[in-house]
Image 1: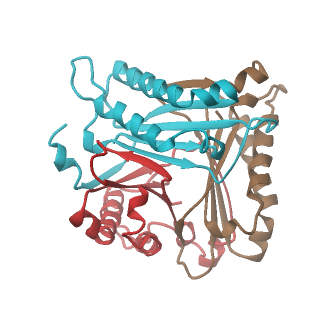
Image 2: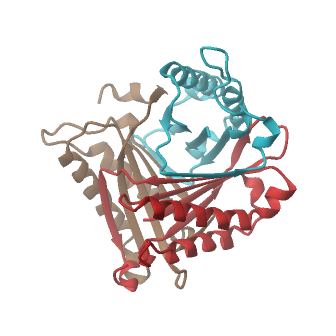
Length: 134
Length: 134
Length: 134
């Protein structure tokens, strides 16, 4: 972790550079630091996956509404300040990348950060060793 | 919110009108009222996103089984009566739209309603203002 | 339940037999038994759904990193031993199927088991009757 999964209506696809958007969101997670300047997330654990919906319906359906749902799952135990800062930074990136859609049409973006509540956590990675300890 | 995400086996795609199904589910959410006749969900916050799986496996794999998982995430604080009613209404729509698949083949449908447990909730929308307050 | 949802970077698609992988994971869930030799999951409730991401970003983006996230949602109440065993068995299958990707490139796999926390659970199935009681 952190894992950021983006679920969105397919009408966003043609209007935003989604690969670049994913990279920009990952960069925020790689770089973000806590109150003492320490990296919050291990670089090798940063993952962003984006999924346009095959079908969807938004609100009353009377306009070509768009919706993007950003759901970040992170491990428990970070400070409230770190959580808020992470949310603000990610939303700032979203507002920048999706600005044309907000201003020229109808778009909703929601970012939720969840703390993982897994009862089992098993991992294997050949990425983490590249970065040493976070 | 509410966000309804539908994950389903791809064999359902050809047998059900998924865009119409999404719209019908959204209509239930837009219209549903509580014990006092008050709208439960803000119209501008209703979102349904549907995803056929690229690959999958169901049960013992010996028949062409189908599966649809409807997962509704809503904010905390609604009454048990509202939650139950929402679940029943959505499942009624699912049973109606997927009836041919139930009766002519093997299909499982599960609807879970989860209450959001997000530690950060950041939103921006140009849809909500169209509908004023819920 | 159990529902296993796999979210993964699309670069895995060409290098692994995902349909076979899904089936092998489902087989583990169908067959797994508890301390007393009793089936843990009802056969008709076993579902695996796999989704390659349309877009994504992993770590610092400097290599062609892959990532697969296996998220299993099961009902509450199983023993810790059963949970651990399920996690180990599923990860063993993942390591076997994805071994070429681990050894020839950069891949991360995370398996989380979550216990369902749904406030509403409504089901309908024409699959379960095939298998009688679990």
